[in-house]
Image (cartoon, rainbow, N blue to C red; front, top):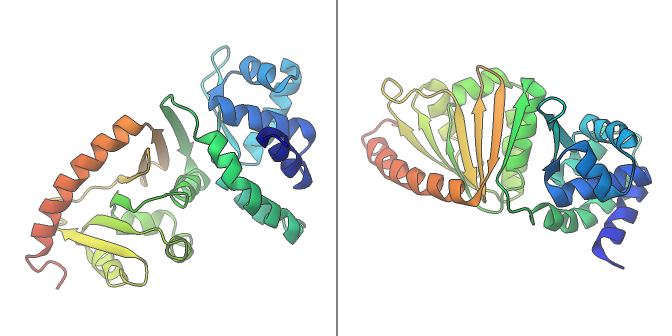
Length: 260
């Protein structure tokens, strides 16, 4: 059985309609596109495409940007399927088990795109979506983070997030302003799979958070409730190199006794 056919059947077994499954797979292959482009690839009519894409947006599996006639839909990571199923209390455990089995295959479809992608998220739920994407990281996350702003924005989210990330074996290196919240969080570095470099808060009090991993750069503006995910191997590589310079300087500052 071909990969798309296997994925199609797996999605339908999880409760997706045949058209929802077809459109989602088409969107994964395209990365993003107009309704006409997606409908053509999924072999459905354009009018039906609108309804199905809006359904996928509601499930958190697609995002929408722009306005007609240039409105585009973009695929979300297949990891979001798990989150959607977990939110449906009536879903059987076998549906979740099926998701665990097929997500790696869907991820391979999702990752074949070569064009840089930029996705925008707004509001508290959007910020959670941005952070959920970091749980798909295949390497240690390089982060600039202000713990105080993070916890004020999503006070009930992060304790569970730290545990889930650590359980997945995803490590973090974080440059953090040495305010009270940052120093307190650094005390949990070992259990939360993190290494923190504390920097003087009076000189380096940044608010937007930046996470860099794989081919992605994530920017989270906690005060404006705006999240951006940039997928570009070139941009991510450049940001990683800049981060390494910043990390060296931050560790030198941290060695001065800031975290004592």
